[in-house]
Image (cartoon, rainbow, N blue to C red):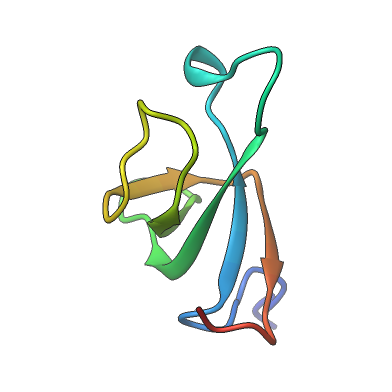
Length: 76
C-alpha cells in the first residue's frame, strides 16, 4: 500500500529552515512560509515565503526544502 506520511495540508503555515549558505549565527533560523505543493524533480516540498527577516530571502518567492515544521491548523 502507498505511504501517506508525506501528505500535508495545502496552504498551511510552515517554518522552513534557512539554507546553510544564507544562515547567520545570530538571528532567525527559520522563515515563515505557506505550503504550496511538492517539488517536481525531488522529494522536497514547495513553499511560498510569507514573512522573512533575512534580507537574502524575499517575501513571495518560492523555496524548496525537506527541512520544515508544519502547522496544519494555521492558515496565514
